Each structure stands twice: as C-alpha cells, then as structure tokens.
Length: 169
Image (tube, rainbow, N blue to C red; front, side):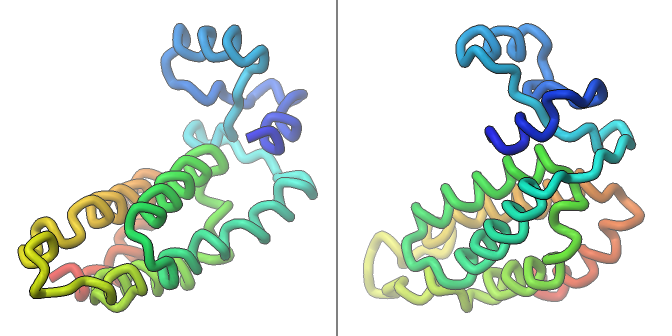
C-alpha cells in the first residue's frame, strides 16, 4: 500500500513486496514505484510510523468485523484475501492488539455463526451439500489460519491454534 511504501521508503532493510527479484523489478517498472514490505520475516523489526499505526488501528478492526458481519460470501472472500495480504506485508505485530478479536471471529466462522453463513438455504440445491455450501470462503479462512501459522511460527502459533482446534473438530 502507499502508506507502507511511504513509511519504508528510507528503510534500507525493507524488503520488496514480491519474493521473486525478477517479479519485483517488473512490478517496479510497471508501477514506477518499488512496492515494499516490513522485514519481519528476517527477524528485523521496524517500528510503524504514526500513519501506519493509525491505519492498522482503523482498518484491521473493520476486517475482523467483516468476518462476523458481512452477509455476502463473495465480498467476505475478497475482504479476507486483502486482510491476509496486509498482514503478510506488515507482519505479526500488526495483529497483536486485535488477536483475541480475530480469533473470536474465526471461531464464530468455524461454528457457522457468521452472517454469511446464516443465509444458506438447506433446500436450495446450490447450498444443500456442505462441501459446496461454504467451500470458497472456507478455503480463504483456512488461508488466514495458515498465514497466522506462518507469521508466528510453531511455538507461538501452538497457543493460537489451541484456541481454534475445538471448533475445527
């Protein structure tokens, strides 16, 4: 995002958004800007500036609220995809403050109590089979859980996963 690029423009340890150097170069030429991300994956912590912190404090609760309240599965799928992308750019510290709310929202989804899951009609042939009922959004929620595992690593994620496991079974 532009806010992150602006915050990291003078940080020598910032990483290109694209992991593949050739792809990063192609994106920079195409967009005329080098897309950056925080180097948390290398164990380097760069403090967020005021704009990034304010953006996280404003936007991340909206992403989490959408998991609970968004009725349209397609819209929620896109919202969670964007949330995953942002978390990968910003690193685990971006979610620390809202982790309990995020886990509560994921658990709400896992127990089929989210708004998007309330509109399923069991008599409709398109939603009768559970494997198709929430397939796409379930894959996206699984991607979100996998992203949390990637961000926190085995030790810390074990504590997070323990809060999700009862509802996964």
